[in-house]
Length: 251
Image 1: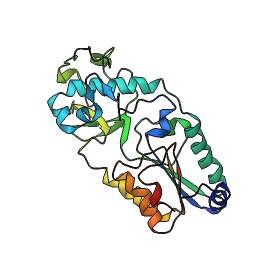
Image 2: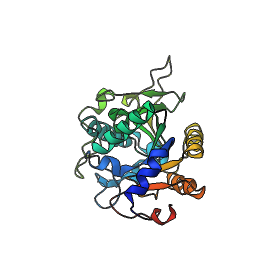
Image 3: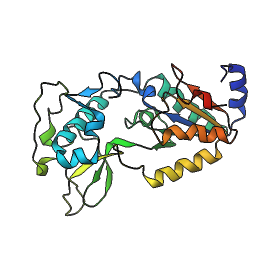
Image 4: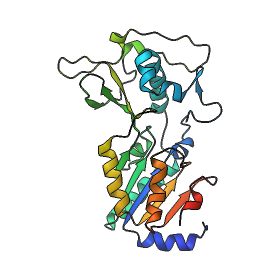
């Protein structure tokens, strides 16, 4: 791959449908903990030990403490220049009749806060819940999400689990349901929402330029998106602080 800004500007100027794929690197500058790599622990657990259906079935209180902590942290974070530039790009180009879609692996909603309109959140959102009983998905920005979680979720390894009874954890508010809510995020071992995936496929089929921003391109299936676009001869531009496993697969 070559770093040729003149070349990129030419391609960018002609592009009618731009797909921007983003990952944790976009949010890092906003101070969002990624829970990946060294030091990525909450208490004594790594995210992949808590963000699973089995962990939730075994200990919903602990998993909710973890997500409550993440929600509270996120409520204090703001979009950084990357989010703002991406939202601004969409705004300017839409005035010229050109489209921009942001396909993100992030669950922090910072793209939305920055003003991005056409957003596909393939891993869900920290600020949505799904009922384990009736399946209803709802936006939820309450802080705390339920009274029992107030002041809970401290990440310090010495902190004891709150062991909140299931009936005091977030409950569904649909008529007469009262089912246990879970975070509406894709956990390890779960598949992506097929409707969201269909939307993503549609966008990747029509895009004539793809930007990969702040993602290491190792988490599947998102890691396949840009190589798939590149394979049909569409230019891909990668914006990262270091080379990734996908770098050499792009035009």
